[in-house]
Image (cartoon, rainbow, N blue to C red; front, side, top):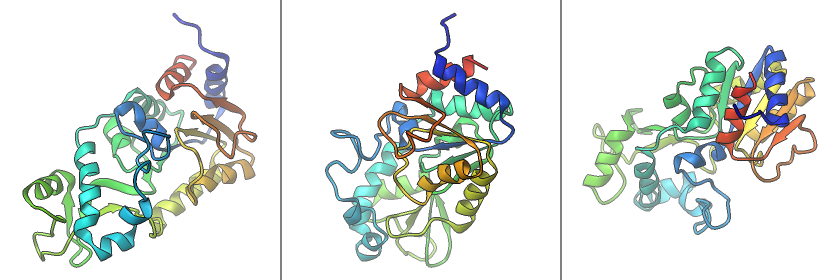
Length: 251
């Protein structure tokens, strides 16, 4: 059996000693599933487009057809994606009682598919789209079919209003209940493990500070710098799958 790295063993020891650990994840955990993150040079989703032009709530309101011409491709590309071993490791930590909950910035639903049960999706999920007129909800598989059959925005089949993906777009506030639950978890956590997040997008990027302010420990499992590198008890900067596998092996 390959020896567990010192850093991974430290994280395993922190988990074993913790009573209220929380995992916070960002786009980096889904990269091994074939989903590009947002800001990596050459591959990031926003590399060649201005998100304020194509993924802003005003863009959806102003021109739903143009909005969906961008977003529809992303939806279709995500439907068949599957959890990778990093998602499965996080779910296993929860199943074994080492982690109380998972807070994610991701909208790809892969944590849920991996088996995470107490999941707070603070930016929403692609799992469904909503009609802002009648409140109807349409599952992603049906939305993709509507996109394929039409040449513009998918329409609510009850009132013919353009659908909006049930995710937080630029210019929108985070869902109040989800954010409040995430903040309460961060406040109560004695350990927060941040996986695959640059921790630059607020208010979610403020959650580690809440945990640290309450005396909790902080672990970073992410490549590249974050604003919290100097505050972390441990930082693992290798591949997220490899690092989380090693943490499990150390338990």
